[in-house]
Image (tube, rainbow, N blue to C red):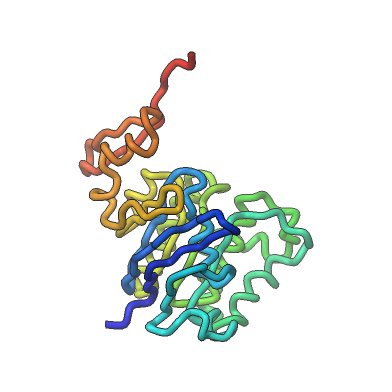
Length: 255
């Protein structure tokens, strides 16, 4: 079976500083994979390498069994979409134009499916507004719609829920999970560990640019692993309904 994305011994150096070191994993069709780890672990750097935005110093990235750098920009856009972290827009492009930019980059979706994505993300009333007049959460939903309308087989998302309230976070992750169930694959950098446990099939744990683990959430997010990463700043329990791990900030006094 040809896998959508295979990463082999990937490293990235900024000058003499290693930001990623010897990363190895592969994504299966229909899989939602979360990238987790403390701030500065290398999550965004990895996604930029996988998107083609940055070139790894060492190692290889294979997209459907072909080197990523062998694809033209148009070919890559047809197979791979990328949603970077939220940034303040410099220009007031109209929302409708932004989401249809994704439509022009890849295999065409029917208008019915496009309308369905717009409706699911509750952005119908935003279509004629300049994006720089929207809230951060509204902008993020617009860019997520653009990503879905691009209709690529693999979706890369860098903390897409960071500016969303809990209701829209749940909406976005359920929509993303649905698209994976339909055969697409996704790799998402995420800070909320409870959300990662709930939605992700496997987790890639990074720390200081190194791969610590790549496995199911239950095997990656053990109490021992969480304590090692976050020390005593969080508490780990089992959820009473489904027995999955449940992670909360730990309140303690500051000397």
